[in-house]
Image (cartoon, rainbow, N blue to C red; front, top):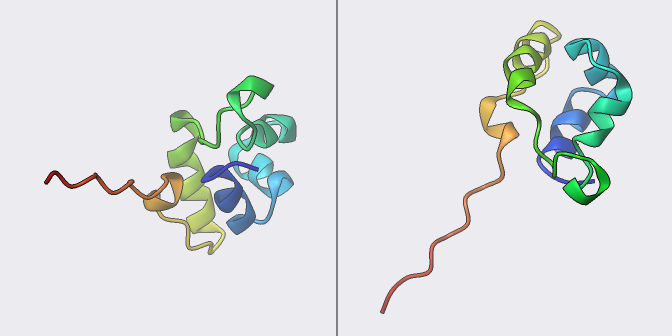
Amino acid sequence: MLEPAATVIRMCGGASAVAKLTKRDVSRVHRWTHGKSRGGTGGRIPTDVQQDLLEAANDAGINLKPEHFFLPAKPKARRQ
């Protein structure tokens, strides 16, 4: 399962719970964790879902934050 989608889904109680929160089919939610070569989103949660998911998670008492939707930035190589 690819990140950050796997973490967000786990935080929200699993794919079925996220499907209910976002009014999406559970198969669509699973695709967020698959690579693009498999028809997935490469671990990214679609932007049109993020706000709805944040609001639904907040209403459900889940401590989901915008930064959970992104991987940490890779450190830039220093020039010498």
